[in-house]
Image (cartoon, rainbow, N blue to C red):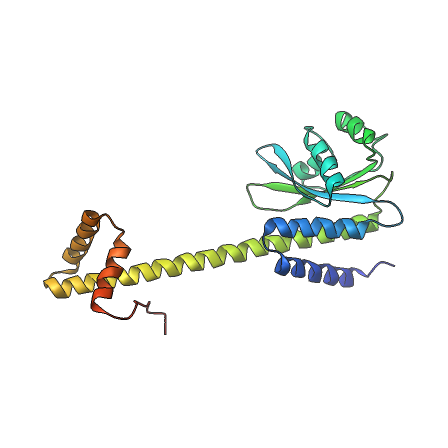
Length: 246
């Protein structure tokens, strides 16, 4: 029995949040997602395989797959310029091939896929950043697979996974920016302190003190911050702190 829409969304959202928290990086998150999706979809009706294809500069490549067979099927599709999953990525729409034996929208891919036992294919766009597009690809050995209810559930999981991934990337980027900002503040602080020391020692203006510090940095061939830290350490036993540290 299928969950009602609200219950299903809450369950899928909880799963995506857990995957993000437990994954070490983007690749491991996508790997866990494809394996989880394939496991959920595989049942008495037949086996299904999942993979994620990345399309960049018109070149397709398999990023992750639920197993060797899934990678084989996905790399087969990437070898052609057209296919259900590549169409899903390029058009930003869900594409279903009910039975590749009679679906001739992609004739070259169709023959190769049928020869390897693929009967049904479902392709869904997977939203990433502006520079790359991706798709979730699901392969089945059963013709006319993927009911409307199943497709709706897969769409929901794919959307939540994409949202979770973008949020994780955004948070990581913000943490990196905060770290860079802190490093810049610390660097600025020690340089300002060093300039103050030079002004006091030489009874000169701030501009002159900056010129002296830069000239010494060039003469000794060391970074300005390192020279400033060395100078501050020579007159203080405690490390420099930013104004925001207690």
